[in-house]
Amino acid sequence: MRFVIWTTVIATALLAPAHPVFAQAFPGKVVRIVIPFSLGGSNDLTARVLLPHLSERWKQQVIVDPHVGAASTVGATHVASSAPDGHTILFTSTQYAYAPVTFAKLPYDPLNDLVPVTLVTVSPQIIVAHPSLPVNNPKELVAFARARPGELTMGTPGNTLPAHSFFSLAKVQITPVPYKGAGPLNIAVMGGEVALGIGAISSWLGTIQSGRVKPIGVCSLTRSALYPDAPPMAEAAPGFEAVAWFGMFVPRGTPPAVIKKIRDDIADILKDPAVIKGMHNIGGEPSGMPTEEYARFVRSEIEKWGKVAKAAGIKPQ
Image 1 (cartoon, rainbow, N blue to C red):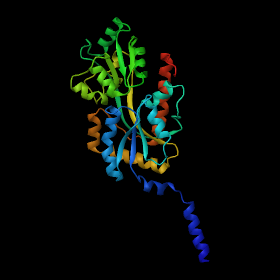
Image 2 (image 1 turned 60 degrees about the horizontal axis):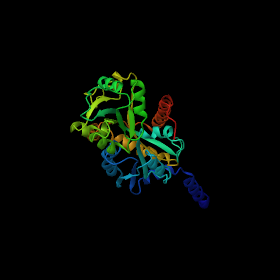
Image 3 (image 1 turned 90 degrees about the vertical axis):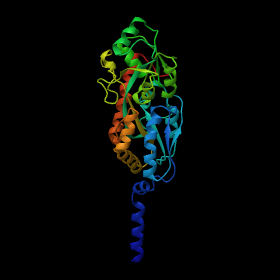
Image 4 (image 1 turned 45 degrees about the horizontal axis):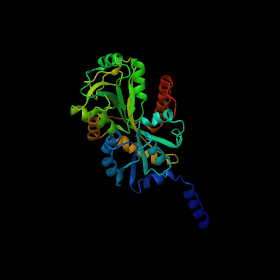
């Protein structure tokens, strides 16, 4: 009889779900936050606000692990092929939604090989100009560009889709110039290599405050609380909206309990007044969106930018 009881106990233990136990063991080693863009940009700056808080909470070292190249797809590919245990996390941006539109073939499936965890922050994009450009607001820029078709250049931090959306709605001819991230783009606009730049507010605040570039307008339909001084570009390009978002993904197969822990801990950290202030200082609005909602959001973003590409006649390369 005793043998039967112990056999039943052991069998019950073996049949118990492994995920809660796995979640308790996470993290069991260094956690790598993979940044697929050049260091110094908005993606990197946002991650670094979170890192010390995650390290403290998880009692493990959490480090930035740059994997830069091919418009963020190098980093995404690295994470997609990593062990699905939560210790390698992709922290990427809107570029994740641009990639399926930009590339005819990706080395990973953005809807299946990586699992959305949570939206960390959102930030309206902004158009800035070199101080020498004689325009100061959206209407002046559009008028100037229309009078000089094809003469102006606009740098982008990788993908050119938001720029093309603006060109189409504003009915202007401006040449887009892609750079490998916000850092190189900042340098290009400050140096006058390109006349204009577009990207997340978070990647431009420092150079705007120093006077090395000047803001033209935010890429939201109304003024942004994060930068209320800049008028919306929609004043001169009706309907134009481009919001930068930053979120986390893990490899397919990561236990749901681990995903839940990562998301819940990040959402909790994002409620910390010091973290909120830190995010606002770099132009980001904290989110902590639930995983299922974030998955729907990512899918909708891929669909949205696919339509923009089609309207602009942009074909995947």
